Image (cartoon, rainbow, N blue to C red; front, top):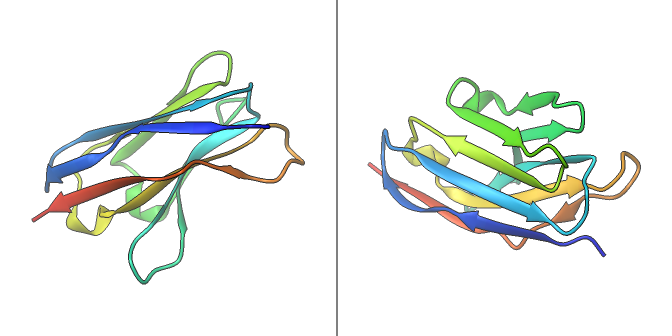
Length: 114
């Protein structure tokens, strides 16, 4: 069974940076991050696939950068110019193969103070 383990997150002031990491128990076709703020739906932050094609949510474009290791077992999310509205629980997510259901991590809290 695929497992995703997240690290990073925490409290940062607006304008600061944080780095999230996620490690998978198997080689993944795609990995990335979603987030969910209180009272809001879960939304895409960034994803990267085996070909290193990336997709970003509109609200983080130009500020966040996603990268993965060469074997597809880890991703990093570099978050720059953080804003209070980036405050949310961030979930690592991925698919082991294209047709597989999404596997979710346990979530990590990111809080940006103004």
